[in-house]
Image (tube, rainbow, N blue to C red; front, side, top):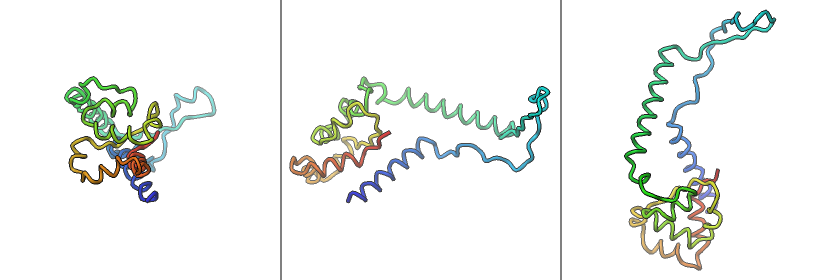
Length: 165
């Protein structure tokens, strides 16, 4: 079970990283063209600097336009996102979950577990299910998770949704 939860956590963290990068490669690979020598950079020294532009002007303009479009979209999302307009405590992930009304069930599970003290004040990414998602879960399963005699299963459940920095 521990191996499965570790694999599940790694899968979730990988998906989060890919999502945050918008699935874009870091940069284009180096070209196989010979580098040009820049005589102005040598200033009479024996050293010369070699350079090869990584992008053509068209590629550079397209990348700038794409970055500007992403920035505009992010700003629109920030302004139109009702969650960010609410006055939640954003000092820590735990405080946010604890004060956001749509995560009341997850906050209840965190408080019932031994994980609240570990989360408080630490930098973590938490893949938390909201109350709408918990409404679809079998109530017997939720009762088992909140049973004080079954705290290990609850801690494992909470730990599987955490990704520490």
